[in-house]
Length: 210
View 1 (cartoon, helix red, strand yellow):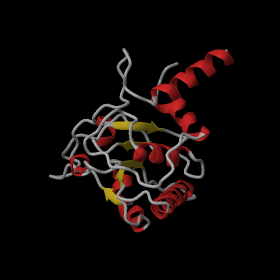
View 2: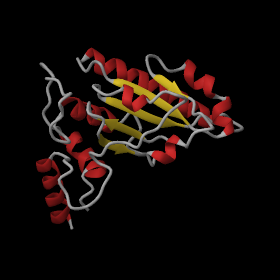
View 3: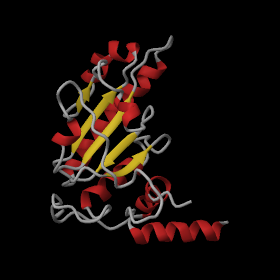
View 4: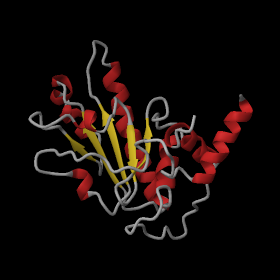
């Protein structure tokens, strides 16, 4: 079993999470068109690495759930600042709130805790964005500069105290995951070597070779 898993992981690293496979998968595909009002966030994000988090702000009796998402939004801010300080600039971060009534009512609480991160409240007259992209609560999707999906991460890998989301952004920023892109830019002096953590998220979320 372990020999088979090691071989799969090695193959994943070699192909670099490319879309060269006979099986259909979301990895390296363009997202479906989705809008918030008249705005098309993904179209406007072309030319930038884009990180989209799907958060649901809900209050229960002891407010535990809300506290968790306040912490999540705070950690997302911290990750943005950390990567910018390391030279990973011009990355587009956005959060799409759930469309249920309670999440919409608490939208302002989530907005108060996000810095330099665009928060979208869904237009209820339009199709559900979460359904369109096959996202669930706390999922984080990362797209390259040409708008192709490089990583779709779900819990527990989206816990921001772990390295998976950060490494997914780094790898996407450095380019090449989905092949050539006319909008890619030279990453400069940033180290783009594949780390052990990077290969782990590739194995778990992108290559889908098992």
